Image (cartoon, rainbow, N blue to C red; front, side, top):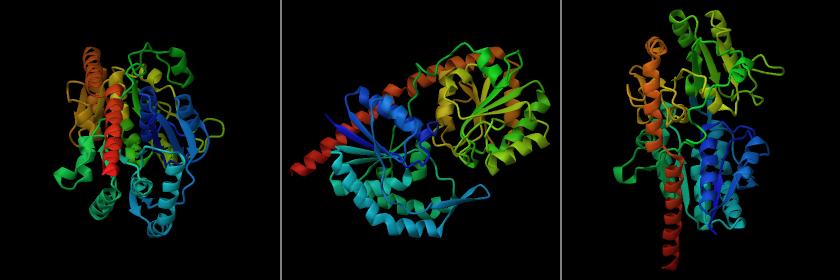
Length: 419
């Protein structure tokens, strides 16, 4: 049986909602269903490893040395850290050797690598172990410095490692750059349309969150509470929306990555990070607190989508936008900015509404208000959104494309070794 290793480098073993981890779990589920054996390497034990085991994967500790973080956040931007780069460079030879040893010990036939830094380190480890590796590009760099200075270096290292590079969207492939013949192949993420589907809303579930389904509109926002997703603009959006529709409520579903407990603010023991604290203060200053509910980390997103009238999405450097496709599968229309990969998911005025200027939150709120006033249009957009997701972003197509690619990479490596 073919054995595939999958490398994940997120520290929090309880975090399952991150986009890359949802993608990895879907890949595990699909590859196991296709007859592959899967071994996932990650740090720590907790909720996420338990989910992977329930899907049929083996889980092994990712005991590989690494340096400090390469970037630190300054005013919402990713700024290179000289200490991070120095310590990572110092740890590089040992890390590559540790990966090679790990891959040999587990008798792997190929490796899937989920995160950019490990695309290089684990990629060279796979090359040293004599097995093919697939580097999965799942986002667009947020820092101009990273794009202009480090992108060519990153591309060169990926090529030197021998990895096959796959992007989740055309926007990500374009951001990776380089000559056309060296651009990543594009395999869009897939959505489980049996799980994300139109459902009857559960009034008790929403009442428990403080958002009773009493005829007042519910505007949803699904995503991690971090600057990459532009969540700091929530108070501004809420101010515009609630000025026009005072009866509306905004339900935010997503983990606070600055707080490992990731509890909803107001829950016993909750410790909002400074970033989330600033959002809460902005909401209070604008008079929106009470009508904006931060639900925190949730595993019932399909059921929560069922009670939302519209989903909004703030990110303007989105590599794919799983929440956009999930909302479409649930027949919830989306209002988002026409930037990066969003237009690959949402077709303007067909499956949702796109706002041209990613700084214009007033226009976003106005489009939401228009949809809230037109239930027939919301239903029409939602119906077409599900059809689009089923046709273009099915989980079966996503897994099938990766399974075929893995088999081809293994076959190609066998041919090379036979020569």
